[in-house]
Image 1 (cartoon, rainbow, N blue to C red):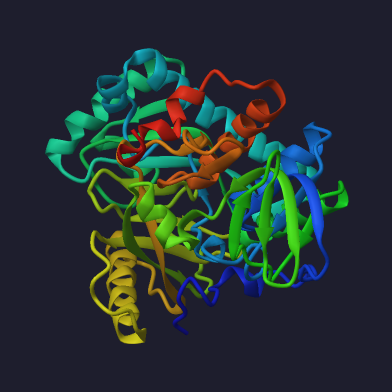
Image 2 (cartoon, helix red, strand yellow):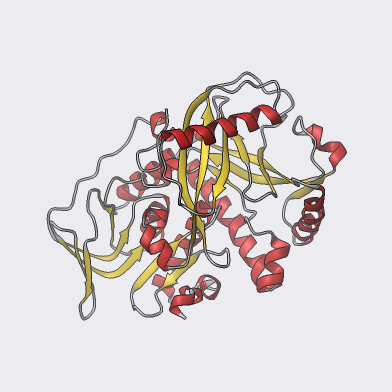
Amino acid sequence: MMRDERNGVYWPSTYNHEMEYPALTENESCDVLIVGGGMTGALCAHTLAKDTNLDVVLIDRKKTAYGSTPANNGILKFSSDKMLHELIREIGTDDAVYFYEMCQESLKKLSRLALDLNMGSDYRIRNSLYYASTAEDAVKVAKEYEALHHYGFPVHFVKEKDMLKYVPFHKPGAILTEGDADMNPFRFAQEIVKSAAGMGVRVYEETPLLHKSKGSDYFIIDTGRAIIRAKTLLFATGYDNDFLAQQFGANLNRSYAVITEPVPAIKGWNDKCMIWETNRPYLYMRTTADNRIIAGGLDEDKLEEPIDDQLIGRKADRLLKKINEMFPDVKPVLAQAWYTTSGESHDGLPYIGEHPNNEGEYYCLGFGGNRTLYSMIGAEVIKELLTKGSHTAEKLFSLSRVPVLQ
């Protein structure tokens, strides 16, 4: 069954406790209006409801936890797509290490939240195996291990001769990372919105932002059927707003994924560690609690080829072949395949903070492979900016980095 990210994929079929929220039909007012009810908007709403006294409204033009959330692979790792030693070279040691520490701390916060929400096996602490795709990349992997180890991150270097302790294939080296996680992203986002609503956040579905203007001390938001007056406006629309992503300089691409039917015990995949590689675009794999395999990658830098079931089917066949190549005893049977739009900022860091030219207008855009972690970081940064007026990382994530806004 082939579905694109707009119509939902595998994850919604695993969760039958979806909440329905009304469309806005009467005028509203609030301290903070969050636009976007996916993972980012959900985490922002929950954080503000839990840790502040701000009056919060969340709107989504469709349904909460849809958009790109159901196409999320559910992999949480504190290591960025940009290696720590590369980031040190680009932005300096202090900022690079601080960023990685924030990613690690945000993962811990997500894990605590999952525990509070009783996610059970839909959120599991896992190890990650980041392997060198080529002998040339083995040098980079060794250098990255030294950087991560030096600054106290929980990593181990896996030599080529030791790869079989973890997976049934040979690669010229890898980094084993402790304390990462995998999850059911659809259920997680649904539960977060439900929890936020229970703490007083007013949630409205099928409520688009059609027009915004600025009054003397509040924004005026026209949703078509009602008006919202908000002191602060927070955009958390992610890739669901292609125009916004392009406006902020995100390099959009398309990625593909498959999930198999449940498979028997997989020989050689000893602790079911999550797998990803140095090659770009990279292949990733993980398992689910009911022994399915999720694999993805085959990214396209340009969104030019028309998307249809035939294209997704061809990509799915390649991913299934990859699974069989790496795990020869597995004969994977396709359950579902899908595509998702993803992207990165020009420097690999998320955009979080107030618009430099529009006072009171904030953005939490977690562009990058770690977007759920970036969303958690963003929720904390936005909270501090709104309640204390500053955050130690605000310059690191500032929208002033956007070339067109400089």
